[in-house]
Length: 132
Image 1 (cartoon, helix red, strand yellow):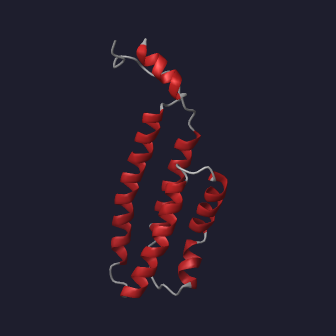
Image 2 (cartoon, rainbow, N blue to C red):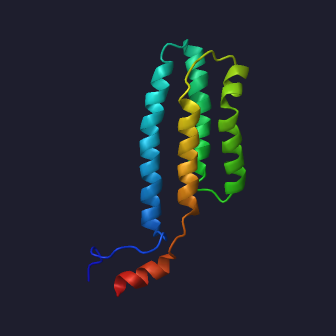
């Protein structure tokens, strides 16, 4: 019997719903990051490469939040990296004004953490529910 007519009465998500959340967030913020970094197109090539490298490191750390057993380590490292991003860019002598980069990365990381904190259904409970 199809379950398309049911309404969820809990915030508990299935593994498929969890993956859909994470994939959707990553797609949206990947596009946002591209838009934000377009503001840095006038940088000298070496500065742009450094900005791109720094952003890529932070993005990988954000992606780790949804797929690692070391969530406390990567959560702390990601939060610190984002918090100190302007100082880090200044320390490596990147003269740029990309004010939306830090908040874009921060919101992306927060969205992933929120999804990580959602309660999940156990996979065998989902299979049992589907077979009924």
